[in-house]
Length: 52
Image 1 (cartoon, helix red, strand yellow):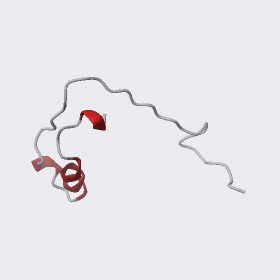
Image 2 (cartoon, one colour):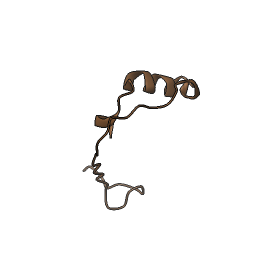
Image 3 (cartoon, helix red, strand yellow):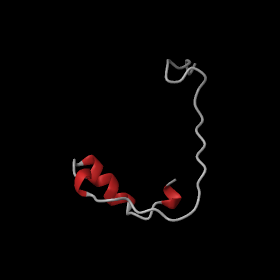
């Protein structure tokens, strides 16, 4: 999805971190499509295995 974002990502993240997101304005997006793949551990968000 970030490939389609036209709004400045750094400014968006800064506004989010500093409580200014309400004043950021509308996000601008490029036309097109995106694919997002999420990989998660079998028992996510539960515990995780040992790293031993």
